Length: 263
Image (tube, rainbow, N blue to C red; front, side, top):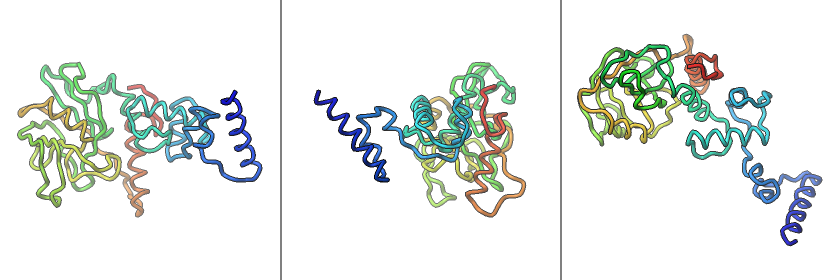
């Protein structure tokens, strides 16, 4: 009885706030609407893309159903915070997840009896295969920016450093570095993978770089292929340039900006 009275009391409080034109904090209604009340994200930059991918109503505006669906997706992909906000990271991680079963469907990375680390610059992903078996599932990466592109073709790991600091870029940390061509290496970064580009290295989330460090040894082979998509005419505004670059990366998955999971 006390629970019912409390629920009715909260409902009256919310209704009174609505009638008075007063904003009601989401936390105030958590006892009434359950999980829906805990998911109160705003409309995000990848709202429409995620609505389409998740089979939601495509209106480009956040709804409680949209928020819960995105939140559920984020939890499945291990994204934190899982707050239901349709941001760039959620969208790009979904693109990677879409191809995890068969990242080499287009047969761009050579199949060998030994381990090959495949670095797909076009889609900005990396995976490791041995024969036709994927032994390290695809993860997102950040390759070199224009003018400092990651070198393509066959490469070989020739040096490994668990802790390393760049002598070229103001002692920038390069955790779990595995060098494959001059100063270029596979390594973790604490920066945003989906913004701009590296100085030529292949950046990974630190946790992914650590797993890859444990898997590969000196002498392991890499095959770097494709080309990081960049607009032919770069807009002046940095945020606009990055948005265009990201759209082109998404198109590299064959979806023209909306993943369809065909790879």
